[in-house]
Image (cartoon, rainbow, N blue to C red; front, side):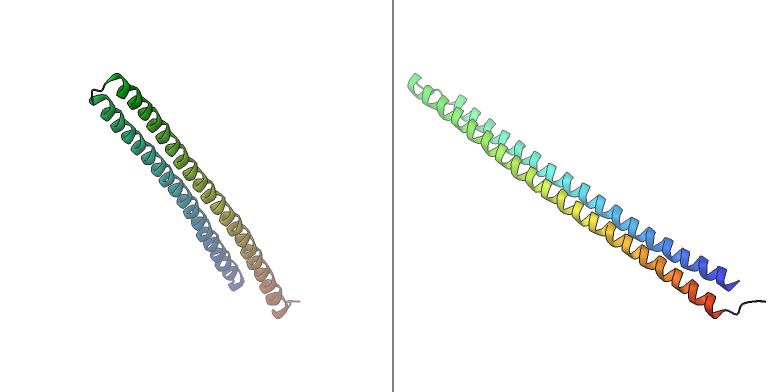
Length: 144
């Protein structure tokens, strides 16, 4: 009877350990999703800020009446400013994308290592359980 109770307790402990490891894996996944979401928010806000600055430049250039020579140079400056803003936005997006890729790779590596460690722990627990059962069988008297 106690052998059956010991089996139930050890299986319960193994199940609890697996549950804890699964919850930890879910938390890692949640962290990954949250980090990706935050990176996307930063990229979006950078793009919006660049658009706002570009809009201010447009307003400044259209509000001031100028002579035809000044208008031409003003339009050229406006085009150059818009091009610079576009390049800045593209550069910021590349930086954010690269950072997101690095975070994803890092989390994937951690997840893979965690899965390997979990498999090792599970295998060790099963080995200990089998060894304990073997020792228990040897120590118990054999009924004739």
